[in-house]
Image (cartoon, rainbow, N blue to C red; front, side, top):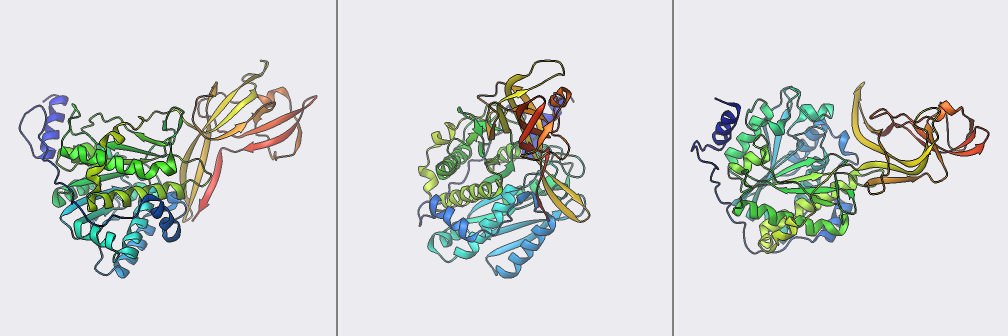
Length: 465
């Protein structure tokens, strides 16, 4: 059997449809409920989140032990409202739990952190649980609990989360394991879908922080995808529902993230879980979280996820999703790339010793990492030189203006305000790809003397636990 034939066979086997036809029929989604008290609007939810949030301030530091502790507390204090269940174990024998609430006929499945270094939605789910706990007896939430049964998996890849890495401990991308099912985490997710037969799924991720939308180009804080189930990107009731949910989320988030909401290309990817789950009859909405222009981006990004989840669940429960215009989803700008954490604009740099300096822009790429050592988790921001040249149209979370300044490699023990004598060779900026961004911005005082105006390091500690 050829590779292409084998892949086609696996696609149909996954969906239980060994028909040999060109595209698999997809069961139409059961319509969401109609009517009922509306849930809080986005501004109200934003204020509620500010007052009631329980999530950690720094999502990358959330590990399996914290998830266990939080879930045990929910189980002990939630009474009959929440059902916490161990669904299985990871390769390294860490528990993978589900948390469920509601008793309605319309079943929803959400899963987060199938990539271990994508933690934002995990934090938002704990704020969602707290919202339900606090407001369960209010009419809108009581109605939600009567109309929906919501199943969530807050951390699907605990081994990856422990290392803050995308893949699981087998070095397999779980989100590309929907056909082979070589990982226990993938088998668990497929089993959940097949057992619960949910009417809609939420696939919760973080995206590369270089992802942008525009023009004008800005970092994409949240990107959505109504997942396709075939190469033709056919429409059915399920895809219409996820587009309407995307419209609800767009309308809810735009007041807080105007120009920072995007849409993914909807090409069919047969190895991906969202595509296979949609093919099997559960339409999936992908929510990807990206950068935010703040030195502490996590709180705002978690808040955006919280508003998106709560508003869309209420729209399903009260039927207002039926009034959402799918064109609002379709008209979202498509994601692009090439964004920077920081752009140093209009600065003088020397590329090679002996060459004249040039005034140009320098883009720094930021990546968040977690270092685990001596029983501690340290969240880090690492910065590298990602490009030089005219970056006038490039998106950046931060700008440093280098007019009449000189950029140079960071001198040992240099500090802002210090005056240094530097040879010409000490001014040459590294040109190697991904060179560490240990840099300083200088004012020339003449005769090889410089004053340090700004210092940048390639590694910034964000928090320790």
